[in-house]
Image (cartoon, rainbow, N blue to C red; front, top):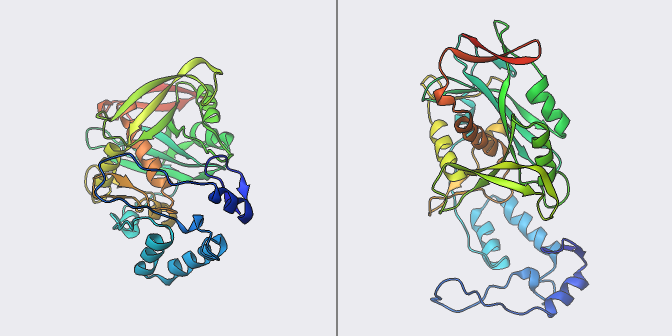
Length: 342
């Protein structure tokens, strides 16, 4: 069947064809035309098997599995009536894995190098990709992955970020100072923006909802917006809340540069020794197009990349670069206190 792009109902072939018969060409009015023509996707074809979605899927898989980009380009151009976009991999999986150090998952770096820890989560339909990351002192923003993976509930996120213990090899305890979570929930069921807002409100002061934006008119690295009602409704959010709007182009540029720093040099983006290839792969899929904007190829998971972008945004919220070397956060008797030295 076909899923309607507007109402999300599933149509049969017969219903789809009836809808196509009632359709009409719509003129695009953006820009000054150089040539006048039209694009007709085969999904809208009424000619024999041309618009049969099962056949189109079979054709697509044949092209995809062939490994021949020219065959796939032919399908995109001819069957989907869309322009072919070429892209190159900006980073390799092996380059990401080269950033691993000797620590196991969950162990915080020792030796007084950690100023604070932050957490970030990317919201999906059925769960959350997350990471806990430790940050060094000073302007270099050297950092160390402490823990990452996928969980399916808000309770699990709270356990990861606020209940589980994080120690260095000397037994010193560290807490997650701030968490940023993707506020843009699924439009197709599962976790919603409203649920993210409610979770952030329950953890006010330590959880920030984040909306990533890549806009040419956004000149700041980040900005705050007050949200007074739940999305799509007039239902007020008691007391309102602050949404952090993040300039993803800015932070992705920063992240791409940091991933190019050797792990032995200041400012490196360290991974722990158990960081897996799937996480590394997700850090490599996005690329910069001809207009200088970051793009993710269709069907390529980039959750680890997004989580890392949120982590960098949090460093500006927490002002990691300004944390003095004598300041540290550690947990004593279940509460956060200040102490000198780590």
